[in-house]
Length: 298
Ligand code: NAP
Image (cartoon, rainbow, N blue to C red; front, top):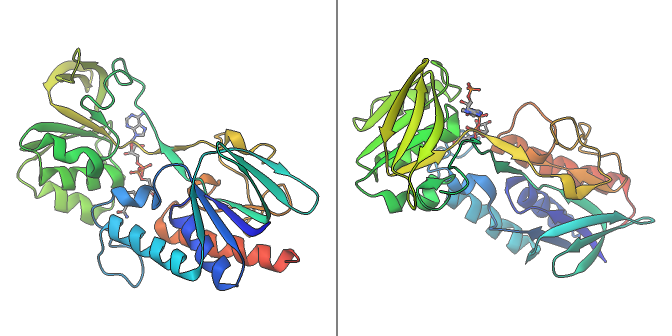
């Protein structure tokens, strides 16, 4: 029986683990892919208070070290269901069953797909959702980034240093990304912007060769070798029943990160909230653990 099981090894989950371990509680972090979460993809982080500038990968690695040094245990497994019991919760994964007095769900979100013809077929063959992971495959080639938020601009900034030409394709004229970031990317001489544009279809048999676009109502074909989709995230919380979700699939939790089930908390991007940032993910981790400590008899 662990004191805490944290589901998800991103910023919220690892922050939860740091707080739980520092309270001297036995803590298991379960992550299905790679520890670090979505910030690993960000070339630079410049909006975390107290850290002037750091790569997302370094940030994630430091946070993992911090949790490990504090005493957290880690397992790379996929959670299949959670079973609230009398006074504890059983977490069932693809490899085992674990019990904990408190569970923090910090499962983050998945990359949203565009949902256009050819996208699923060409994933890994020109279509990617992670510039930092796959950018190197496009050295001196032409790529497109789809989206107008911070993730899209982060991707464009990184890819501009690898690819010969980067198109940023956005459905509106204004960008959601921070103005300073937008200005920095606009100043790069190998980045071009195509706005009021939607991708309608991907062209290519075995490899992506072009995008069909609707640019302000006019059809256009754009030759590219790669397309990086950065249009936001969506939750994947279905496996956590009976935890209540909102209409978009995010976990409904109160400001103390409590879900509808006693002893189960939600932290970070997987929960319904208005601001999804590193700072709010880390803050949720602290709040969820402090709430559990104040509510439960360990
Ligand atoms: P986001 O801020 O929600 O932006 C998503 C972008 O994709 C928007 O420009 C949106 O267009 C566009 N979009 C959404 N659905 C689309 C569709 N079906 N077709 C075409 N375009 C679509 O998401 P994000 O950039 O992934 O960022 C998520 C959160 O992480 C944000 O809070 C962001 O600030 C944060 N983040 C921070 C950093 C950092 O370095 N600090 C890096 C990455 C992300 P509209 O604008 O028209 O809605």
